[in-house]
Image (cartoon, rainbow, N blue to C red; front, side, top):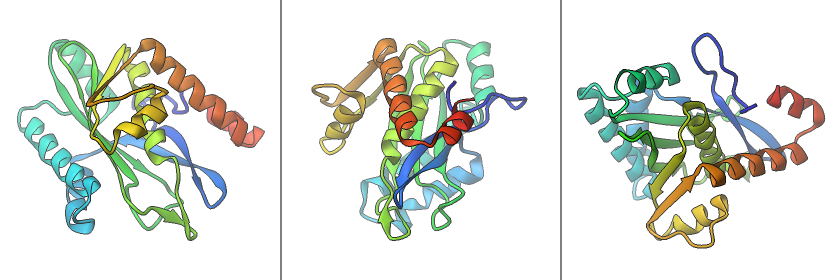
Length: 219
């Protein structure tokens, strides 16, 4: 199973895990509401002169532009409905990562995405809040977890291709996470590599989580 449970509302959050203070802890990846997008837009003021702050501001700006065009989704159900109504329509959405145990910041990361007219998933912006720590230790694996979460979302939507742009500073991250030898300014993840990414992430998680935690996560 995907590590997020489908229910009456269409989808509970996709759950991934990060390393924080020597333990693997759960983080939820959810569709942002308008109020949450507004909050994300303030990152630029809170963490000035950072890529994450710039990406967050741009993501919020684009989300509101698409909203004016009636082309955003704030849930998996809304996204599915929009795609079903017009398969060749482009729909934008913002995913935010949050954790109950991390009280200092509401969001650990964000991913601004689009479902394209040919039913591909585009990752326009991925931003992880810089300097995240818990109990005085860095939180690790947030960006990797978000990519895994998007691979789960692609699976739920029946999307066979996910692609995005890489910057000079983010290319090594995508090479490592995707297991690609070289990533230049564009990366394309097709169905096979996407499935391998999901399997690799789950296998690593199974090794790290206690058996009871793993059963609860994977049921």
